[in-house]
Image 1 (spheres, rainbow, N blue to C red):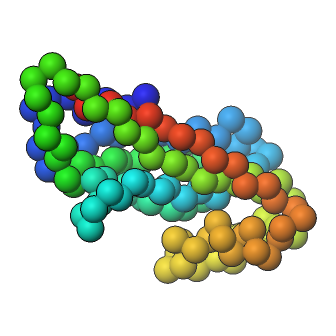
Image 2 (image 1 turned 45 degrees about the vertical axis):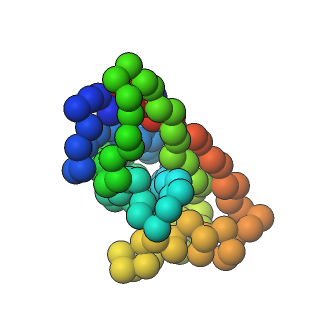
Image 3 (image 1 turned 60 degrees about the vertical axis):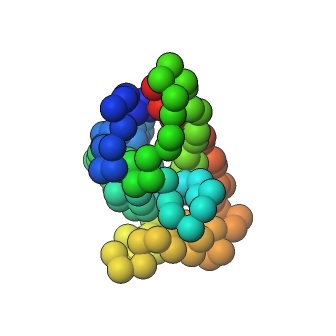
Length: 133
């Protein structure tokens, strides 16, 4: 759970990490999705997509508050973001393919991976809860 504490302001940032529990055996490709209830996104995530390569045990992520919700004193607002991710086994054709991906196409990596290797990779989704207090 990630918590934005009052006083809330645009640009307020939470730093958290994604963990690769078996960095010697797996590469992780990920992409964050945020909720957008209006034309302006509530959050920006940086990096919003990427991969954790061999040997990387974690990746630092920054969640920026872009649209400040209106809260009455004492109110708590609940929200969530979603991370879509897939694990790639090291030493496979899938890994060789993933290592060739261009950084400029980072936002499309997960979709490209799932389209190209549908029988080799399983997409997973994890919800991360956010609280405004």
